[in-house]
Image 1 (cartoon, rainbow, N blue to C red):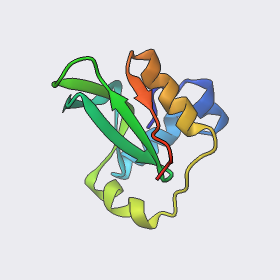
Image 2 (image 1 turned 90 degrees about the horizontal axis):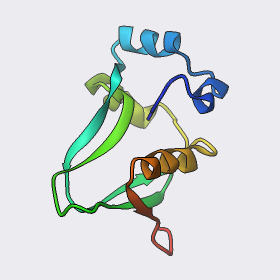
Image 3 (image 1 turned 120 degrees about the horizontal axis):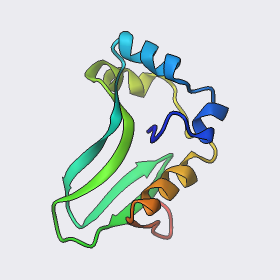
Image 4 (image 1 turned 180 degrees about the vertical axis):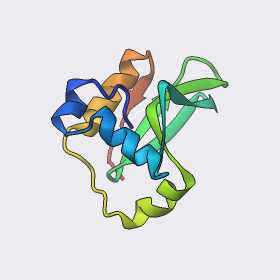
Length: 114
């Protein structure tokens, strides 16, 4: 997830507009400056990152939206993702959660983590 490719977090990781443009040109991602979001999310929702569960609680019982940033994997990108050898990036989970908290989403991680 890339919430803002100009943010220091991404720049320190070497992610710049040119890199994103190249990945889009070869068909691995879809880039949108206005961003993407999951829509029609229920009040309670869960994702996993690096084996950790991240749980969301929205104030509305249904029809919620979760911002996912400027980039989405294309169908080709999704097919390659399991074999690409990607691993959780140190500090990204905290960064990602902080972005959603700024959006007003309540987030918690269940204990024990599983």
